[in-house]
Length: 549
Figure 1 (cartoon, helix red, strand yellow):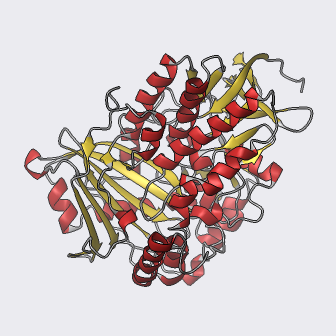
Figure 2 (spheres, rainbow, N blue to C red; figure 1 turned 135 degrees about the vertical axis):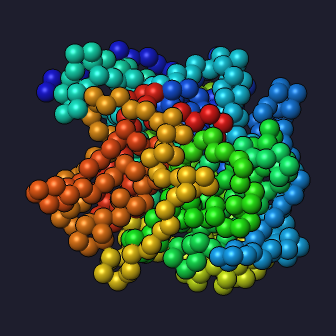
């Protein structure tokens, strides 16, 4: 095959991903020097289309980046007024009082937000400063420099045939070259994965751990709406099958965010995270809130849960990893957006200093130092043991041990228990089907609970069907030859969008990939026990079109 010729554009800094980290970096660069040329590439059809988060926002990142954000009209207007924690049983609940919780768990001063709308607003701020933002431009390849550094990315390639050959309306895209390339793709991005493997960025660090977060937006009866109320639950329906829990956030306009997180290190391959979420809504406390309301949107994404132990080296020749690409989520607080913003700001300051000194294409070691010793480190070090303790000892023991560990860290700056290891990857944690019984899930009722394909239609997901499948099997024989007999092929259950099916025909079972349904959560890339599925970006503009997730 002849090499594809592409036009190129050169910038000081190329940023992949218009999420909170990428937009923060772009804004900070232009604040420091309006003459720095900055481009932001976003694979979604618009900024915010692929943003899904809880979200209760700690405004410390926004305060540091744009101190007058209130005066500038940021869509951060619903302060948290009430904070509730419950452990659920099948028919009832027990409230955990707030007083024994470490101070860092307090949501006072935080805001219930749509991060999609926050990112849209941040994009406006960036463009006013002169940042170029290109939505609908998926960064699909790395451009490697002759010296082995990351020199840029290829974006905007369209029109390949399903078999990967060049189609009639093919557009080769462009090479966007930068003195520095910032990767802010979110969790388990395809470019970050390639860069981390090439440069061994995870060596010496614990494996990254993940959860699957699913979320619906509901419009509820105004009489039941309590603006500013935040509720988190643990326990039923997951029980001992998996770690995880729920969130219920009352924002404005009688809307409620209802979400459910399942830790992806579960063993039982018959576990069906999406159906656990649907079953959760039938708990009496939740059903009473939602009855008479209507679900208006649905989406899902993976969440990085490894915490401090799993943060890889974040610099490489020519660029950096930021935000969820680096795994900066504070798991017990269920917050990562503030750290994403702080990481973007820190990366921008390191790049600015380097450009001022006439440097280009080297490692921004100042950024690594800032991340390892600054506010992000202080946030993550204190809570680093909560996730591994939960995984090792279960919910009740981890509440006591993790709480004690966080209290100690809050008082003395570092955890009582040192740094507890995670051990296996989430894929390796999957057990063999022969050791487990299938789980019988109740059928969705179409009022509180919904089948997957109906819910996916509420994510406004769309993919051009004539392109190559972006979910690539390293070995097409593995799903039926290995995963089906050994693990009951869990892809048909762990995917929250119904992408994977095992169908029977006259020749026996076959594996089908409905890539058009994909909401870009990356769970398959993470959880497939054979690590046979490689998630790559489809052409720009495809995927979900989230409204105010």
